[in-house]
Image (cartoon, rainbow, N blue to C red):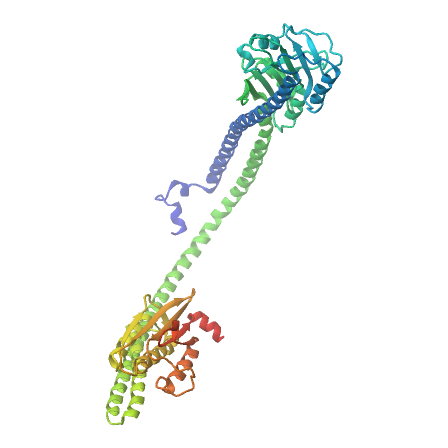
Length: 557
């Protein structure tokens, strides 16, 4: 299209606008697009930050629940050992030094246990690993003692978990696990209690790598808080936000086989604070993009003015180039027409040459037949062999004449026609000839010619000499692939076979035949193998291994 047509009235409005106005419009669109994309990415990251916090809380609650389950499980094992050490139902509770040593050993082997206590049926302390002798203490009014004595449902299968806010021995909150001591049916003998230090649990929670402030809470099924810990980079702000009732992202997880729930809460303000810190990245990118658009827009305005000045000169060059292109195109079309005519003439000439070669070979065959009728029997056999070879070449010229590719033939089709002619003309014993060539095989004429002569020599030799006693036999010709890129031609008969000494004169070795086969195989780049008595049976097998044309060229090189 000529350049002047871009600014015609029939062209779209975009092409008829001045270059400077178009640049300003593009700059405005780029600015709006930059601001819109920055806002869209910021909102998307806000949603992603909230979702990440929700996923983090869920994963953390799973870890806290798993840790709490293992903590309660191991502590309960210690508690059961303490109950067992207290003896059977009719035994007195241990309060001597030896008993104290046994319980103290349990505490020393478990780093998160603070102490083990034994209380009698009235709530009086009988043994405490905190000190020996055991200090005077009565816990008859404590919830864990009341629950175990009354056998209420809160004991949860004899195990009861509660919290102790103040301890005069450890000066820290404790998690208490209690079980009733072994007693006779209907009687209450006392309570065994282990005290777990939350400090060990807090140390585990501090190892969790969170990006936000968070609070971790362990509660009983009735809502009683067993442990509450606020941690994170803004732990103080998180505690203040929790006290003020600000929204939080929380995840609850029930501890396996224990009536305890683990909760992990992340203040929304902590998530938003981190998200606001990332907004500066988008603002920086947006400012950089705006500055780049401004600079590029200014440069584009200057170039628009220069391009308008160069448009007329470019239009003139376009008109000149278009004229020269039309002229050159006409010359090329004329040259192509001449070349097509020459190629067609050459193809016709080649077909005519092939046809005449075939006809000449047929004339030679006719002359040889006339001459063979006037000579004796031994000389006539030599004439017949020469005639057969000429007919082999004539058949190849005929297939080349019929082929769409003047220099290539389908060797499988050629082999079938060759064998059909040989079995009808060179078969004194009436042997049966079978050809197995299931797939086409396109070969160059330079390689197909020696292979055709080899096939003719081997098949005719088998038909003439493999069955000297006159009994009918079978000759099999196979043309199959070999490996990935080669093919294999096999000629096999079930006749008398070759002698053990290849140099010995015999009816199967008529002088020129096998010598010609080996010479032609070398010309085709093939390997010939003679197998006497194949598979332990009668007859002879000739194997001609033929590589592809590319491999033949490499071998010759």
